Length: 344
View 1 (cartoon, helix red, strand yellow):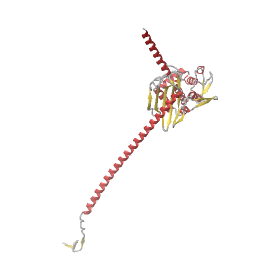
View 2: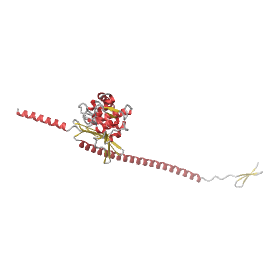
View 3: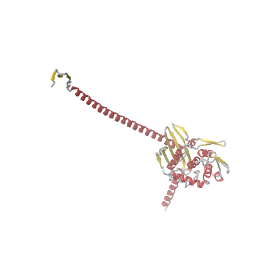
View 4: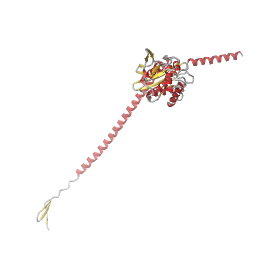
């Protein structure tokens, strides 16, 4: 009896330890892709579903960019903050109900401060309510084939039903770069001033490091998913997108991103070198073939010329035909060699 009791206690303690470990170490996933072609360079658990946290705001921003492009709002349009929007949990600017913010400043508040109150205010301005805005978000997700993603709010605030994958966040990041190039440079802002207060961007990777320039996109954190980030960076002519979720800390997450960026650009550089060598050898082979072809043509031409010359020489060797000269007089006709024929 005691043995069975000890076994039950041990099993429960093991289950508790594993459960605690799962909460302590959120699931990790990462993906790297060529921003232009979408080709996957590296992936680890790319279809693992987890909460996107504030990476959700990339979709909120995308719909706001769309409204700007369609002239439904302008950069100077005032967005009023409702009581519900003002009541959102931090991070936030800290508006009181009835206050307003321009679309231009709302974009910067979402990118840098990751302000939840602004995200809800934008949703209410564009759709009338956050609930209707969420439907717009999910419709856009389907259009982008983000089939593993479900949005439940505009801010990314923790919700167990709000799920995504790094593969889907990659698609969203790529669409922002391709569809809204005029707004994309805003993601590189390291912070912005609003009413005399500086709001720093949570993305500490922004800027140039070792020839690699990080110029976007968005970070996120909730306990269930850990520290998340979607990053785009360029080196020379190449641009890649990296999405990482499940970092234990922001520093460890950023260190992983830097390692992935370095490895990815090195891989692309090696591929460029190999492709260049293949093209060079291919060109050399084509030049050699062309040279051989010209050589054969010249050889044939030379052979033909030789035949003509030989033929000409044979013609010259033919015995010359004597010229016949005829002279006439009243009585005789003279044919050369002084032979005369008497006229009849």
